[in-house]
Image 1 (tube, rainbow, N blue to C red):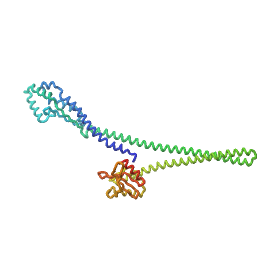
Image 2: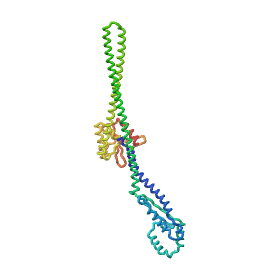
Image 3: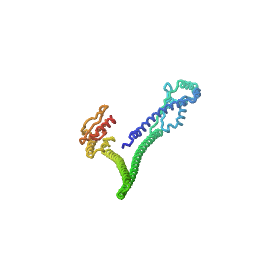
Image 4: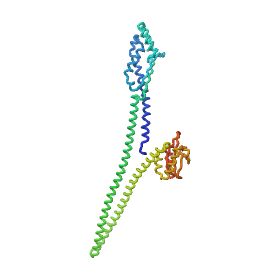
Length: 385
């Protein structure tokens, strides 16, 4: 459980919706500024015809905006556009309202009798005073554009999470390979040392045989006694040297065997301890829905004896059902002041530290004994102070 990248997992879950919302808001502002500038340029395309009184400003604006909105693909992508055009005196030119449509109909009926000069004067007055343009742009949720943005962020989060997990797995495999290579190297060194011992033993037997032969010759021969004695002394010195070499090599073999055994036991204990912690965490999640457990609490509980585990789980059961029944030993204080961490004892020397949130949620921070109390308090002070 310690190899799970909880921080990266949390960011990959939390960041996509946040980035999605921020992107939608940013695009709303960007589209609004760009659309406002575009629409202002499109409102009046034929000012000469307006000054001549051929048609009104409203007709010019409705025709230009209708043509532009019909050819725009923003609506298909899910962008809602609202446009309001009015004069300085508050007269709405676009979109046409019911009153304006009736008035336009009356004006069309009187077009034959209207003086072009009067219409040109009215158009000139409106254009001279200036137009007020208000453009609103909003990306509709659950549209093609918004859904595409969300899918992109989710896809990026999945890629990042996959890369982090692959890197963690590669690191674990690398460490396993290094340990295996070290064991193989020590085993190879052990084989070489064993071969050297066998060679020394063979030489030792050779020296013993020669010494026996010389001793026999000493009894049989009376000549060159001094030479034989000198050769015997040299052979005995060589024999002593070989025995010392054999003892050194045997000590090396014993040390290599101990190192290999220690490495193998360490790997087996680490795997067994990790598996035990995973089983404890899985069982606690199923049994105690109202209590959360930190990794240190799971590891500490798994390291207790069966008697301490039984007493400790009784306290956990009480926390899950009704924490008010728990007898609090004391409140924990840290360097930064008082912390909302409570200490409960069990089985005389057992210690359990938990924290209660504002919503009433119980989180067990650490489980141990009096012997590990200093380490547990240091961990809590560093992590939760």
